[in-house]
Length: 202
Image (cartoon, rainbow, N blue to C red; front, side):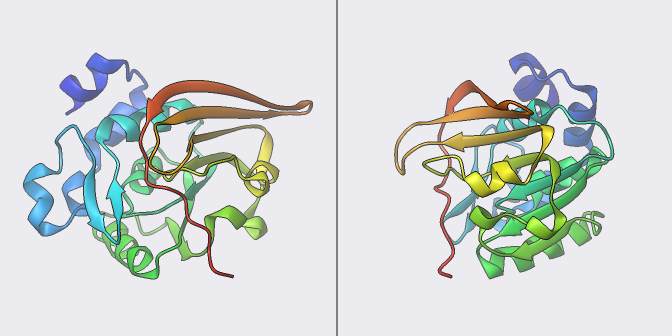
């Protein structure tokens, strides 16, 4: 996975490569999917959600470009794999999952893999985690149609947000957003396909 899927495709961050090498991805997929855990593609994790392909996890982690000790908000915990990678990179990770069953399973997965310090809660990702803001980085693992303003507000000045943006069932664009004193700058990275980001009912 490291040599063929990541390094050959431009992942060069030592911290990202080390984390991807160390974190046991097979612990974050269902038992019947474990033989496929390290293939170059997403896998279903139930409730219409997926665990992203290893390359995409690495690319988004590298794009954040944060130092150890940085505080990161993840929207869309899923099975917990992306959070585990960030935690292995010595980030302080806060993760929000809309689906209670996935949040519960992700917490168990993270504890089993040795990442019990990751803070996971069930909630509406569009609202973020205001009582813990501001964050050095924010990463979204589901695609909103527009960049949520509340998440921009919860990003530190100088911080980075990485997220897919686009309509449901359409090709989306992975974007990097950097917040400055003068506003935000946005950079388009690659075309992607993510599950849609869903709003909470309340």
